[in-house]
Image 1 (tube, helix red, strand yellow):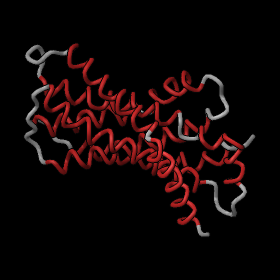
Image 2: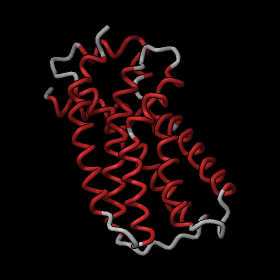
Image 3: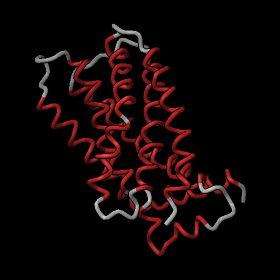
Length: 223
């Protein structure tokens, strides 16, 4: 079994287990919808420019929802010590990271697809920019979030208070990505600013996050 197959089988295993129960997906979806609804009441239409509010609320919702997914990324591998079995495979341990990143990327992407039209309707936003700009923004931001979130989920795997510690570690690190994603989304909604500088900024931080995550991941699994 080569590295790519090992990554694919781990991703496929998590995918089958999740869609057999839909436990994680349903939890993330309910949490995301509740977050959007609460923000809708906090910022009623007409008080503030809806395009500015909607771009921030979209990414705040995704970040809050993502912390739930990252907290549970490795929890299933602690059962019967299956993580140790994965580490015994004759491959670089980063295949575990990539398999989990792919799974988290898929989960968060599903939430983004569902939340996006809801925000447009609730906040009465009519985007004027090109949709591929928003699509590129979502891809770049989600890549950065999933790599950092998955790594920190592994770091806190054996920590009792990981539900509390993960947000404390996760939020400060992903601030650059969230600021850039919010501004690029605002550019898509309003058409008043240039999104490309923010997209380049996100691409740079993605490169940094991915490189650091792959380098550090092996050390997070040491006892």
